[in-house]
Each structure stands twice: as C-alpha cells, then as structure tokens.
Image (cartoon, rainbow over the protein chains, first blue to last red):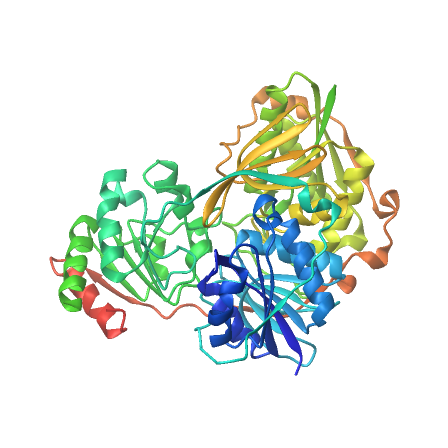
Length: 320
Length: 262
C-alpha cells in the first residue's frame, strides 16, 4: 500500500488534534508516515502510533525554532525523497499552508489548501473544499506531481488505530534559504485554559451586540460551561473588546466546529465566510431580521444579556 | 540609497455580490463587480508607511495579473499613493492557479526590479494565503509573512507575526517578501487629489512574451490542480426560531441537549 506523509503539528512533543485528524484521513489513501520536527519530535511517537502512523520520521535541530518556515520545508522535502509518498498532508494553519506551498513548488506538484474532506480517487486523492463563504462545495485533485494537500481542523473525527509507529531519524540538509528569516523572539500565547479556536468542537462568539469588553465575561462564562473556545466578530475586535487572535471571519480565523453559537452577531458576509461550515449553528440576536438567522439550526430572537446567562445556568445545572 | 517596493494586488469579485463559477469551473467574473481585494489595501498602506518613514528614495510599484478590468485595482492603489503600476494581461492566463500565478508574478517582479515585495495575507476570493510564500521560494529571498507590524531600516525588514500558539518577532535582510494582515493598520481612503493624480500615473502593460513565459506554463489546461465539480451548497433547511419571552435560554438549552451538546 502506498505511503502518505503526514506533517506533525506539535508543541514540544504534544501532538495537536488536527494532526490526529490527518492521520485518520491519511488511512483512506494509504499508510500514514508521520514527520515530526524540532524540540520534542521523538516524544510524539506514542500518540502518532495510537492513531495509525506506521512510521515516525523525526529530526531535531535548533533551526526549526530559530528560523521561519523554510527549515521545515527542507525536512519535508527530504522525507518525500526518502519515502516517495502518494500524497503529503499538512494541517491548514497559516504556517501549514506556507510549508505546503513551498514544498509543492519544489516537488513540481500542485497544492490544494483548506480541504474539508478527503477520499481516494482513481486519479489520486480527491479533496472537498468549501468556497465563496461556503456557498459552493468543490471537488478537486492535484493533476501534477505528488499531491500536497492541507486540511482544515475538524474535517474528520479522530479514530484511533494502533500501528507500529517505528521511530526513524530523518536525515536533513538545510538549504541556503533556511536561515533567511530569523525568529528573534517568541512569546507563547498565554493560555486561557480554553480550547484553541480553530480546533475547538464548540465555539461561542460575541459581536457588536455584546457592547463592551467587560461584557465578554458572559460570553466566556457560556463558553466555559460548554468547554468551548471564544470567538469574536470583526466589529467586536475592531472596537477593542476582544483580541484579534479570536476573530472569526474572512480576515480572521476560519472555524468549522460541531457547534457554533453566535451572540449579538448580525452575520455579515465577512463573518459568515469564517463560520458557515460549522455543523450546527445557533444564534441569539435582538434583531429578528439579522442575516445570521438565515443560517441557523436554532435561533433565539432576544436580548443576549437575558438569554446567554440563562443558557449558561441551564447548561451548568444539566451538567451537574 | 533607494528602495524599490513592489506591491502585488489582486482584482477580486465583490464578496457581497453573488459569486459563482463559469462553465469551465473558473471564477465567473462577468456577473459580479470586481474590486481591489480588501486585504491588499493593507499591503498598499504598509508600503506607503514604509515610504513615509524612510530617509531613502522610495518607489512603489503596484503589480497585478488579471483581465482588462483588473486595471481598476491598480487605479485604486495609485490613488492611495503608489507611484506606478504594472498590469500583466494575456488571454493565455485564463484559469491559471496559484503556482502558475506565482511564476508570472515572480518574473514580473524580477523584470521590474525590487528590494521589497509587499503582499496582502491572502486574496478575499481564493483565500489560499500561499502566494507570498511561493514568491519567496521562486525569488530565493526570505519570506517575512503574516505581519501585523512591519518596519524597514538599513536594509533590514522586521516584523511581528501573530501565530496560533505564539507571537514571533522576525528579521531578514533585503531583498525580501513581506505579507501583512488586516491588523497592520487601517488602509487610507484615496483623497480627491490622489484620485486625480492617479489618472496621470504610468500603467505599463506586459504580456507573457514580455516575461519569457511559455503559454504551456500557465492557463487552465496547464494548472497543477483540477477542479472536477462545483456544487452550490443546498440552502439550509429553515431552522427553528423562537422569540425570547423569558424562557429563551432554557429553550435553547433544551435544543442543545437534544443535539447531545450538553
């Protein structure tokens, strides 16, 4: 069976969930071979083996943290040359897409980004994408070279599958470009204790109707009762009520959780572009005419300052 | 000293319009108004700010690859304050994908001459966000991308990149490719004076032969990816909408429990 390379997104050896989803999707196409780079690379092996990686190629070097993107491209290229895979899968983070693009160019291959599903086809993997603010669903494939495909978080349910996960050292020679962009400082994002926005199964977002930074506390309280991430519309971010890193929309993050709860968000096209692929959509808004209600599975026309706290209390009491 | 900045911009269908596909599964540009991609306005703005903060002679060239109407995007950038424009237009470009587009842009950037390339983080139509990285790879220069702050001094570009898990400070020597996010700073509106001045600024037109690119390197037939189908997403079945009369939160909780979210 053909091997499929999976780029491992991890933080000091802790594998992030989108990588486990990729391993599940990779098994539809072939045998997953994981590539883990940088500090803690070898520590990822156990988690990767539990999710179907037959092999884990690792390489630790300071370059991965000290310079931007290119050292990782060099390593993936070395892995492709070592394995000759049927496809390369990369998580669809901003960095993941940059890595995938440069790798594809070097391999003389096409690149597909932001796939929301993946299946085997007669002419290689077929990727489903959701485009034009999710108004259209396309099916595409790479028509030249080794398909390089990035996949959005929450595109597949993680299914454990035991495999050998044999760790092998990858031999990497860094290119002249590898040290071109220095990372002179890195400040880890302060943990809120909440799930990461793009990976979360549930997202609770607030918009203009929240009407002030201090009022985001009630959005956060609902999120915490559900174990959810907190999102914000551009209006709320531009007003300085919530950080840009939490912005959902065309110019912010694109999310597709199992459940999206929009509070005080009207649903302008720019916001819809970032959340319309959510599986279940719920909205709370005073304005019965708000376009967000066109998208919802369940909507409450009402004041979020009444509805959200009541919902939070109800969730807490039901969860006991 | 002089600093030559090339800003890459894209003419895109208006996101608030009714965007759809043509019969050949490329983006239909006929039935929806086009405009300068909003995210590219931030790139033009940062180029202007780099120029305003610089002691060097700075020349800002805006570059686009696209059909005849794409001149509108160049005019907008010129009216904001860019100095000149280059329009790469060729019938053989129809349907070119991101990798092909990066080839055309890279050849045009090299022909124009540059010290710094500034791009928006992504286009608002394709939203791939890969072209700046592809340009850096093709040009063989550092990529300093997804910046919310950018500055250029003494042949070095510095910037702040806000990632998922960390904020990074980046630094590279020129020449380099930069991309900026919508957090880099609100883009200015063209003034009346700027709009009038833009009419007199030079717009060069190049085709594939000017860039020594063969027609079999670009276009839909030679794209590196193929779209096999595009289906309009079925309209969502109308959801349940209730008016809050004091029990809205509880009713919503009931719905969420029924869906097994609680």
